[in-house]
Amino acid sequence: MNKTTRLLLGIGASIAIGAALGVLIAPEEGAETRKKLMKRARKLSGTVSDSIDQGRESLEDIKATLQKELHKVNRKIEEIKF
Image 1 (cartoon, rainbow, N blue to C red):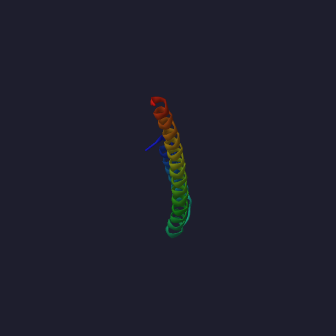
Image 2 (image 1 turned 90 degrees about the vertical axis):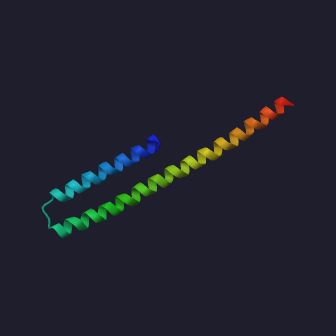
Image 3 (image 1 turned 90 degrees about the horizontal axis):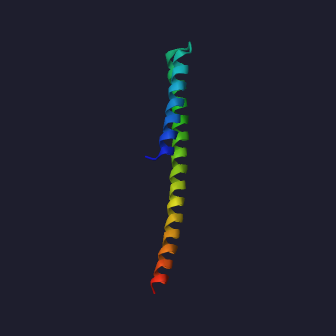
């Protein structure tokens, strides 16, 4: 797991914990509190999933670019050999 992924997961977990504590401390009925927690958890889950997907796509783009450049370098090496 790279640093960016760990950072995003840490931020997401911090937000979730803060939201849960805020809702739990609020003077509302248990059913309402659970409803709010579930709503926020679903929203956070979607946000974290989207961030991870974007990170994965970025890494795939970087990988493709590096592979193209490596191919170019290998061709140059072959040209120099002959």
